[in-house]
Every structure is written in C-alpha cells, then in structure tokens.
Image (cartoon, rainbow, N blue to C red):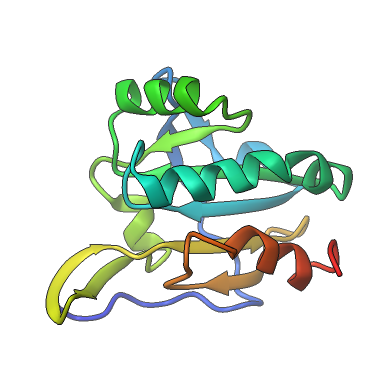
Length: 159
C-alpha cells in the first residue's frame, strides 16, 4: 500500500461531513471561525481508545476555555459510537467514517506495524485547526496515553 499524503501545519484543513453518533450529518465547516481538535482513533470501546477519549473529556473544560472544540472520528458505525459515548460519558461529538473517506483525506489511514507484522489500518492522529481553517498541528501515530497532556503543552495550556 502506498502511503497516503500527510497533511502539515499551515495547510487548509480538508472539510468533511460525517454522521455523528445519532446519524445526523456533522460538517467540520459548521465550526468555521472556531479552533478545533480533530482526532482519529481506531475503534470505540477498546482500552487505548477509551483512555484517549477520557483524557480529552477530562480536559474539555480547559480546552473549551481556550476556545477549542473537540471532535473524535473512527470507522465505527453510529450505533457503536452511541454506546461508546454513553459508556464513557463523553461530552464531545463522535463521528462515524465507515468508508474511511475523512481518514484518507487527512492521511490518518495507512500501513502500520504490530509485533513486526505490517497491515493497513487507522493511524491514531490528531489535527489542531485554527480559526482561519488552517492546520496548527498535524500529529501522526500518536500514543493514546499521555497524548492529550502533550497537546495541552504544545498549545501552551499546560506547564
């Protein structure tokens, strides 16, 4: 598999419209003029993805106070996202990208390695979009644990 084009800071964030956990269309452009953290994760209700989602949830007040919205995207169906949102008590939108169109648009899908075996899948990735719609950060292959703390530091919201 060829590597998908990776995005870089300074580029325009690609717009997308995906169904949320209730199946309602959610467009990135609906948050135009706001700062947005868009993160891609492999699968709802798995330990690492739950840890990452909970970390975002715990820091939501800090992020919102600084003007950031948070949006999580996975290949899961809306029904599974509803369960995930309820199980974890998440207070931000979760979007379903079953055909991986947004993942591919952002380069958050590609070759991975697990225990030396190569396969194709979701690359845990996070993008920080500025009020002008341009990327401030484009972070690929991030770790679930400690990831949110690292983003807070990079955005100057934590010491």
